[in-house]
Length: 449
Image (tube, rainbow, N blue to C red; front, side, top):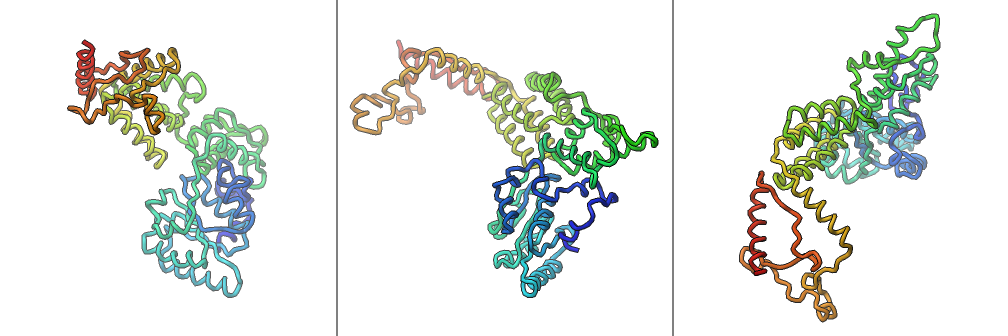
């Protein structure tokens, strides 16, 4: 049975999981991927005009990769084959190629081959597709949760477009849940169920952008709610937070991402980092992530912290924070959480300095108060003869021509000449910076005398 035939199965078969029954059958039913599937998008145009091209669908679990492939199966006039990289090998690939040749020769139909988890194929297995993709015998649609740059051979990758799908945001997950509750044919709409707002919010938060996870959790919670309901009162059954917690075996932590608790927890986290307490920092980080806080929001706060509270006391801290953010973007939950934890411990235990933060605020204050002061002539660029005649760049002293690469010279406008903004501490690497700055400022003072 190929993928198209699977789609033809009755959508009312309630023995199948809710997540499977609720797979969108049209592009208009896909939530949260408008850049990829919305009107005017490349994929929408390809499906609408039955001009499918070879592509690699890259995205986290539950974002709609297989769903999109099945929509292609329904909407195109091609022979469509579903191929699992987990269960298949080179032998099956060869059989598929032969089948594609027969389809072209006898049915005059092209073959679209969907390879789920294509990153699990080794180089030799991927090579087996290469010639046939290039010749046009098959149109390849690969799905992967891993970065195609690392997991798909370059020759094959160059012949495919990479289509990136993202984690579903809260609004999209909410739509997925609401649709499943309302759909009487394939969903839970005929059971008279409603969902409390706090239960809905917990389902959305705990699902971490994964539609399949959200629907699986909803289905278990609905089963619990139905089991507790009075059989004589088929209507009015409500799925409560208690049902969802029981279904997930996980309690909802007190957290409102748009209220006081959101700001309380991020404040506690920030102050724990500033206070050099790695244990407290890890606890507050865990509280936020377990409650469904946007991990990238937390990562951005750590990047900010690295400049505001550590600065040049440990310049490497900023790289650690940025690396943690990039790692989470690459891995997602739960693997990426560890990178955030590593960064939190590093930031908490790093030497602290807010000298750059204070210097920046002081410089910005003067810039705002003094307005657009003219740039001193000697440090202006002079690319034309006229500018040189006007004195641009005259008497500029090139630092590299002097001992130790330093020469006394004023770089601030005359109106604020001599102002000092940056006062490095004697902590961490900034102690070395402080020594250099002190020496340079002493030379400036000596030059004035």
